[in-house]
Image 1 (cartoon, rainbow, N blue to C red):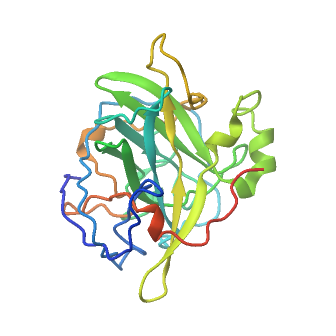
Image 2 (image 1 turned 135 degrees about the vertical axis):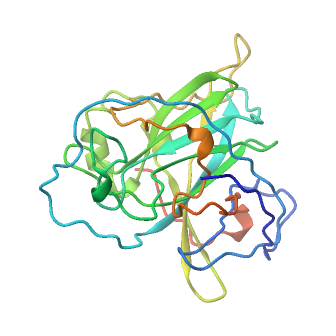
Length: 272
């Protein structure tokens, strides 16, 4: 998918930096667009990738569906351990579709994939370190809790590989072989909030900051985001060809921007 950067107009009340912006969405559903009065371009870039092995879902599972799924905006800030925002970092995400399958030759065939879903995407952080993606909440598969894979690059250097989780699956995450023994596991749970459009439709926002340890011998104020396994389904694609709206495979998607914290409503607990 080609990357197109457009301006979105958001009508929200913004208090002067009482809370920093934490991310912005283009849509509340697959067909309705969110109009906001914030002009923040978020460029989309990426890198070459390679693949792995093993199946997440057996092909004999129940019949697949092409239902729209539950839209969720994943957003946050990339920071160094001394608290400095990282401008121009490339964030990549990939995860299963609403049927628990990856777009990977070792996990699914073309006729098993959800039509119109992108499966992976890339975004470049802005001057304040913010990134954003619009996607559909993935489905867990046998042996793993629901999760979203994340990589962060600074230039051509891969500086972080991790996964985000959902707090409503706390017991499954705690028992997961990938997370077992992970320090600061709480930092990998997405902080969930809601935003309601004028028509009453609710957009779920999952915020996850990514703390990278590139501070050398300097003093650390923040704990680095825990490392998590890449897994066997790293997409066999050139991420540079894909934007940060995973809900659409159109060539003219608007860039997903971060939503201001002041626009968010009814935050829900995300830590144990």
